[in-house]
Length: 60
Image (tube, rainbow, N blue to C red; front, side, top):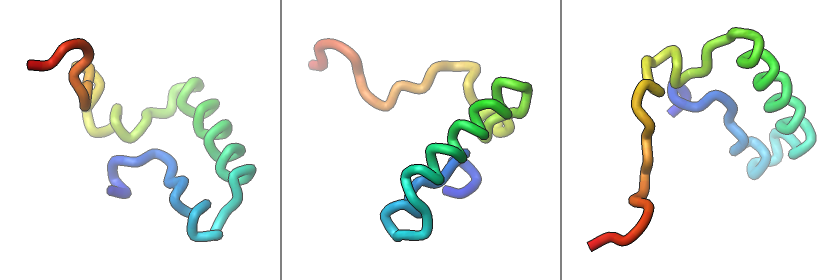
């Protein structure tokens, strides 16, 4: 799912990166998006409609 994920934090579990390194990467990316860079979802055209993977409230 490389095309759908902005930051892959799975590298923490494989030992390729630390939590601190990923935290810094997330902060840097957040600042870039806040400054106008499009996220992967925006590049793919998602976000016009809210995506809810679960039903909130009573389910019959």
